[in-house]
Length: 83
Image (tube, rainbow, N blue to C red):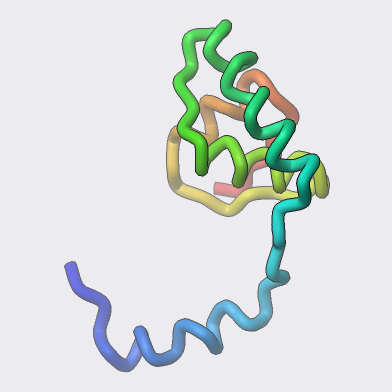
């Protein structure tokens, strides 16, 4: 399914109201450890998902997502999800 060009042109405008998060060094370090705790509970976590989750955890913000992988991560860490 393709996105209509009119909508595509407005993407920057749509996202301008949202804060831009830049991962800190500590986020990368903690994100490297996050999959280990999940794996012990039988949950596989990809590198990018771990970094996104950790960036939200460290800032105590909710992650807006429909990706079910994050629901699994939230079962074993303090990730807040708004879905």
